[in-house]
Length: 491
Image 1: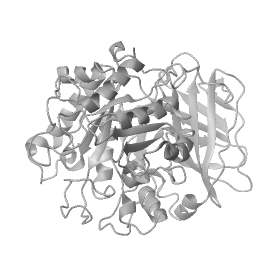
Image 2: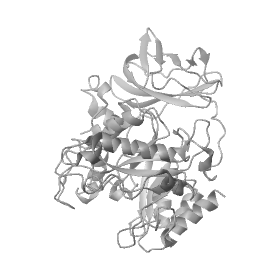
Image 3: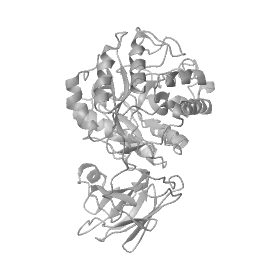
Image 4: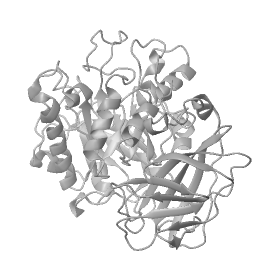
């Protein structure tokens, strides 16, 4: 079953089924002046209530705190909300910032959601004020470069705090940010195998070598048992030691102007389809309810004050290998619970989004589809609800995957990329060459999308695609393709 956000459980206990099944068109209202903009949306509605959201964009001078006011015109009554301090007096509704999201620089946006009751009509508010100044939802966002523009030079310093704007990722000033870079594997397997935390060096020189390829993003796979410090993990590689090592690597990545993506790779759960080991020692078909929500709550609390960090919820879901139908697979993917063929309680993507947002974190979230993140055919249909409006689709591709042709990309990826940002979190091939990823990068460049090569480790073709032969950045024949392409994009 789907698990609503904790703050909403009491209000909607009798209406969860309706919330999950009723589709309500997004309704947007406009104010009167361009100093700020507010997008007001009804995201779901049932017989006596509805869920709504507001996205506020500050086009004025930077503010250190904010208060949004508007009137409910149809007798609606606010119940509760999140990501803001909500209150209502008569018709007047106020949403004031929380301690963690009060700062809004020019061009920055913040989203907040609420639950309210209604009867008769659910009339949309027609005017909004931000700190007493009238807003106009018709105001255009700050001009942004075309999404095919090359990435910001990592040498320019700290990466931007990211947010979703339509189908783009943008920084606070509205500049488009394509995530182009590499994966840095090791944090998912070394600790559970009792061999350390990372595979190979993660000192400043080795991270600088990544930046020297003109990469602007590094994806960092993690292990939930190691992060949570469970008893089966060597304490030297678990809990605070593990977390501090991850934080240190994130800081080094940022110091070289690159965006860190922290990603959950291996999880707990008994699944005999690929391994009899209950522990987080391999890729499971779905995350587990026992530990994964706690993992993401902890990660989100660790990085919620730093929106330069991106959260990738789960490496490669494959519930389709266990369930009887594709519909069951997608329902398991989003809603979790008891899934056919999986012997543990599953945490769905909605559960994980709720865990992150329940901490107040508004960081950009990536959610990969089914079939080892290679199938996005029903991603839009089953897209989780994100009250922060910062959800992005993730996709993985290798030359041996089902969706590995341009015709498949045109039919299944392009519709998703038209609505939300799309990040190819892993691209690679088992040929020890780069002919296939050249095709992938060409298609993604033509659509202004993001991609990350697998992997910045000194492996060889017998153990998986490896970009480097040495941690000084010397590329393999495969890695030469990505290195040269990133350098060509960024001059």
